[in-house]
Image (cartoon, rainbow, N blue to C red; front, side, top):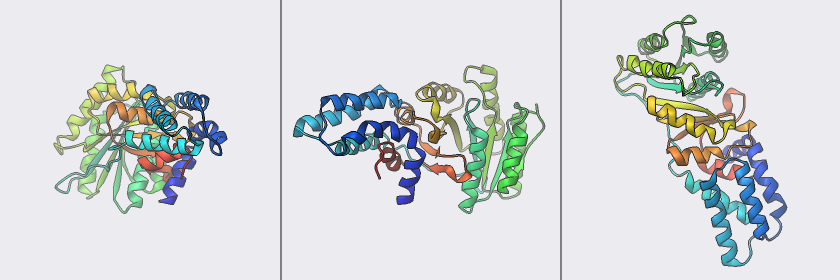
Length: 305
């Protein structure tokens, strides 16, 4: 458990440092109303959003007024506790297929969210856990997409099904499922093209991928997962809502949390959408894709172990 806390604390160092800048000077002393106002301002700056920020600040202020005194570290503990309650139910495992069929994870999201890298990291994680994996290169729109995922597949020694640039993405998904089934592979991870949620034709392609894969297995994809760039902050909520209308989602993966001071948006996204947070990206290495741990995240944000 210590290693999990350490990983989250290090991965969230930018967001945590925002909070720590407010709390560190208070850790060894009692706080006052001016300090509580600073905490509120700090949480807004880390993109926790109005509702989450107010819940944290209200609890800190309530305890401060009840006791007449409160130390900075105690305030941080309260903040972590409130955040943990907000995130209740946010942890989940990937769903598995029945009947010996490959379990399908279809990754969707806007351009630049890190889907291809996340697909590779997820394949690495599943393989590390003793599972067999096949990658399906369904991003036939971006010219360099095949080359990128091919390099990852070779580096990680993972099977790959790909097609030529401009090919039918849904057909590639169909072929990937057939290959996974024939080889007895347990997991099929589909990397789709990045698309703006406002482009109806591209969003329609996702619906087609779902329909075509369901010709093989009516329950597929068992996991429809949006990959969200954590540095976008609260803007990610609108993205997820739009994708969810066209391509009903079962969970989220939040990337690039190690490079942003806006990691607080993760709580706001969950509170708004109630989509499980399956994994978070805490670095560039394959092993930096971590299963989401709400307690480790909540304490890591406030710099606590």
